[in-house]
Amino acid sequence: MTAPTTWATPHALHVAQQIQSRLGPADEEGQRWMEHRRTGLVNASCNCGYSTGWIPREQLPATDELYRQHSDSSDQARTNQAGSRA
Image (cartoon, rainbow, N blue to C red; front, top):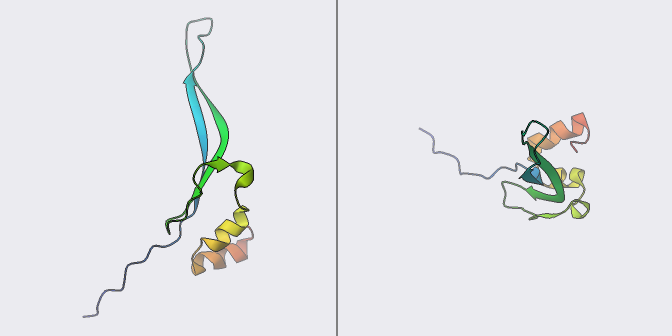
């Protein structure tokens, strides 16, 4: 019987856009709908512990650089074959 290997925290980068929602005004029939809009803030986070917190989109590091820093080697090989994952 072999011993188990050690646990690891593989990279899994996600970039989320913050949205705001509200109940919109009533139309002619009295129906109301949810309205959504982007705030312009994004949050990049990775399973390894990296997180930008909510920052303006313009301050987000280049996505190809983020993916390069937060991808496992097997994932990086797929990125190199397929081109930029941005």
